[in-house]
Image (cartoon, rainbow, N blue to C red; front, side, top):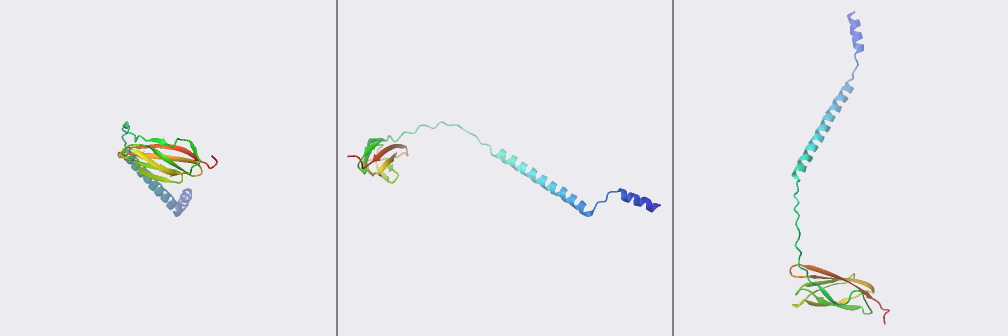
Length: 154
């Protein structure tokens, strides 16, 4: 009879295989590792956020003096039949003068009175010419001229 009771209890208990127990333990272990990783990452982000405090100070920049660039010739929007023009004007004494077009780059220096003059070749059609003056204190001023070179003028 003892054998009979034991066999009934044995059949009433659920059977767990060794593989099922291993799978459960591996799942719990991986879950704990994943949870620890997320916790560690969150702590690192919180520490980094507290280190990155930025203080903003608003300042009003003082206006810098201009290089006082004045172009005497040519006039803006000039239409010419000549393939070269003279660019002349006035800036600060001994300022560096840079003249750029799509095809050319010229550099010069204003004299002790601030006067400068350059001969600039023109491309056929519309030419946008940028004239920049930079004085000894690195103050910069820029002017843009549009010149049209055409051979159809008489």
